[in-house]
Amino acid sequence: MHTTPADLVAALDIGGTKIAGALVDSGGRLLAAARRPTPAREDAATVMGAVAAVLEELLRSADWPRVRAVGIGSAGPVDASAGSVSPVNVPGWRDFPLVAEVARLVGGLPVTLVGDGVAMTAAEHWQGAARGRVNALCMVVSTGVGGGLVLDGRLHPGPTGNAGHIGHISVDLDGDPCPCGGRGCVERIASGPNIARRAVEGGWRPGPDGDAGAAAVAASARAGDAIALASFARAAQALAAGIAATATLVEIEVAVIGGGVAGAGDLLFGPLRERLRDYATLSFASGVEVLPARLGSDAGLVGAAAAAAGELGIWGVATGS
Image (cartoon, rainbow, N blue to C red; front, side):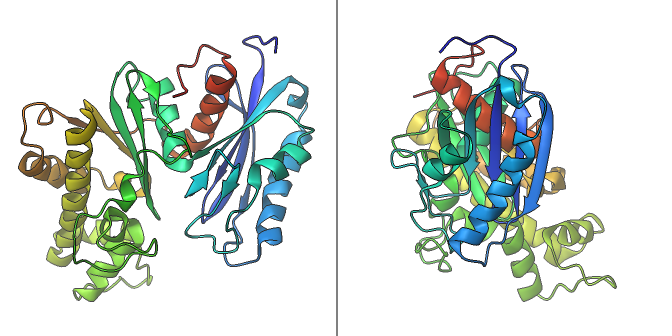
């Protein structure tokens, strides 16, 4: 395939709350964008209908003729080898053939599928906080907790596109059951909904507006509420244990954290860095830096495009296992 820097990649970012799409250029800029809510409790066809609506909006863009490929970052697990997805928070999609469905809608363009954590990792390594790093873990801490790895300077999605899925490492061996089927997973402790759940169970109450989400818990923590602070500290401990385990296995030099919960800033990063010193004690793991992600809500789209560009060998993007 002959390509130029002027070529574009269409990107999809599919999660339990929203389905976003964009056309992305060789500098990681979004030239057109579309978005729909995810009908997460509906059947498979209804969810795919929302994806199709996003794609149809992009197809109407004057820039679409420059598109050479499609990249998809999806909530997981995904199976890149089969082109299918089974997002934990979208029960209507189980082994859903997403790649084939998208390829049909875009006229057979090449389609690359990765997990949403891998997409965020591709973005942060290409344009963000992990740029120039040889070995990195990048994480999304939001409604769920996902992640991805850069090893030896290249994205490492693994055979099915799920490598680095730190949210489902067990850090509390007899802990609460997780929707994935495990117990005491990082996600079950550190995701936004679980930070809020734990605070409510501990006696925290939302303010007059009734907001009981993680952002409201963060506001209470900033005001000194002990229960809210404790819930963030527990989340930070779980994240620290997962990062330390990863560092011990593959010698990462940096952990980049994005997603809505990372917006809590020092409420999360302060205790996380402190607890990481308790867990990452071996000489080759103890120097791991913890940094906030730089690309914000665009990371999933930029990273899905980067993964597709790397697969095709365009734009000079250093991705691919």
